[in-house]
Image (cartoon, rainbow, N blue to C red; front, side):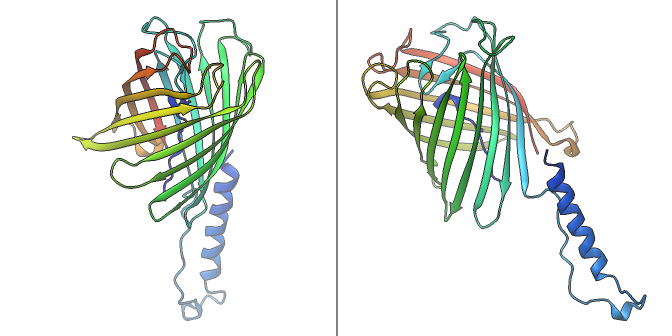
Length: 283
């Protein structure tokens, strides 16, 4: 089972020792199957199961450029309808498959730009780290994710719950909980309902998704209620000229249209389009 973990900033995706351990287990099994007397007749007739070293570990690395930084409907850098600033958002994630539907995941994401003076250093405006557990059964997937968003000399802490069902349009519900505040923020939650569908068009992976969200009172210092609607296409083109031994590389990008509510989220414009493009690798 290959579980893909992602960090969805629009609604907000070392291992050497493990691989070495699995490799040593495979080598030990092969040695046990050898006849100790040198007589082939003394060899065990039981089949030996080969261990695919590292097969329970998957991950991804991505180098993305975005026109906006949108966090659960909030236009963080107040770009509005402008595309004047290019924001660099590299990220990495890893997933551990424990079989029987259970998996764990973690990752890191950066916001790098020169729009404002950094509270971290250089042009690094924010560093987000996360870890979580997931379970899949009969088409249902459940995840719980703990996150720390480090920015402006402080830390915002998040506990998210996600449930999705593998049917037409892949409906998903995310309950995004701010459990510890950064600065003058208040605790609260955003509820995001999403649908998406994907297709393989002549070797290009194309998807279309839509989200609608609602926030609790004072989450953004304003009223509670409808937060935003987001809809847009994404596409990913594989790069087959890079050998599989280096991972599955791709170029990806897309557009997202946002409509946000001025009564709940303080954006300079309540209607705008964002764009993203990047290169990534899955392994």
